[in-house]
Length: 424
Image (cartoon, rainbow, N blue to C red; front, side, top):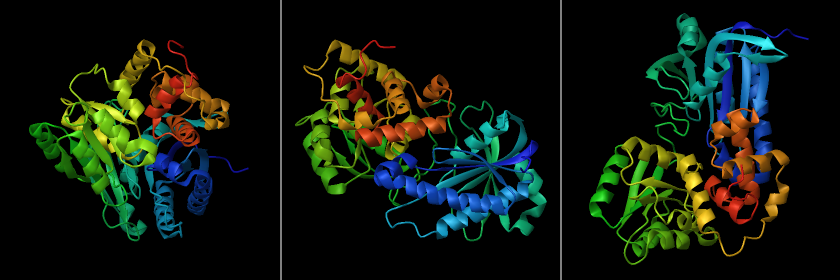
C-alpha cells in the first residue's frame, strides 16, 4: 500500500457551486452526474501523483507531495470538466482551492488547520475558478511558465472563520474560461455568503422590486445595480402590479413589501407561488423586526425576510443567497417563526407529506435541527460532521419533501407535527 504523504503537503479541495439547485433540478439523476464528476477528478488527481483522501457530498479532498502536481491536476480537471459532454440541462460549475500547509495523519485520517483553510479558499470562488493560497503561490512562482499558468494576485480576502485577511491568487490557464468573476470579501458572520457575481441561467440575477414607496424602490435599485451580476428588471407600486410584472418578466428574485395598497405582499406572494406557478424566490421587505405577518408570509411561500433598513452589503448578500437556492432566514428569525406558531397554531395539522417516510434517520435528524433554528455550522457541530455533509443532507431533505427551501421545511416540520413547539 502506498504511504500517504504527511508533514508539509499541498491540498486540493473541490466542490460544486450551486449544488443544491442542481440536486433539486436533476433529482434522481444527480447521483449519476456526481459519479461522472468524481471520475474526471480522480483521473486528473492520480495522473499527477495525487491521493484522494476523502469525499463529502459533492466535495473532493486530495493531497499532493508537491504543489506543482496539485496545480497541474486542477487545470487538467477543469479542462476535462469543461469538455465533458454533460446533458444539455446540466450546468456543472466546479470550483477549486489549493493550499500548502502542515498536516498529520491520525487513525488513517488527515487532520490540521490546512484542511480547513483550503476548503474556505475553495468556497470563496466560483465554478470554473481555481484559487491558490499565498504559500502555494510562493512555491510555484518561478515555475509559472513551465506549468503554463498565470497566478493573478487578488489581494487580501476575508474568509469565513478567519480573523485576518488571507491573500489569494487566481490561477489562469489556456483552455479555461478567459474571464472569471472577481471574488470579494466574505463576512466573518457564519450566515454570510460571498459578495461576488453569481450567474443564474447565464444572465445574472434578475430582480423585481415591489414597494409602494418610490423612494424605497429607487434606493434599493441604486444599491443593486451597482453590483456586478445583479439587474433590476422591473418595479411595482402595489401587489396587483407586482403579480403582473413578475408573471411578465420572470425574475429570479422579488423584493416584496409586506404592506402595499390594492393587494398586500403576502397575498401577492401567495398568488405568485401557488402550485409552483412562478420559479421566482420572494424576499419580504418589512419595517419592523417583529412584523406580525412573518408566519403568514412564510406559509405563502416566501424564502425569507429583510428589514428595509438592512445595510447594503446584507441586502446584496441576501439576494445572492436566495438566488442560488438558499433561504434568507437567520436562526433568530426561525425562532420567531416558532414562537408565532406557538401563539397561533393552525386549526389542524397538515397531512404528513409522503416524502417524510423517505428521509433517512440522519436526514430526519437534520430536519429537526433546521426546525429548531440551527444554522448549517451549528448542525455540523451538533452532529460532529462537516458543513459540506450537512449541506448535502439539507439538499436531500428539500428534494424528498418537495419544498422550495429550508424556510418551507421549517414551516412543514411544525405544521405536520413532526416537531413540537418547545421541543429541544
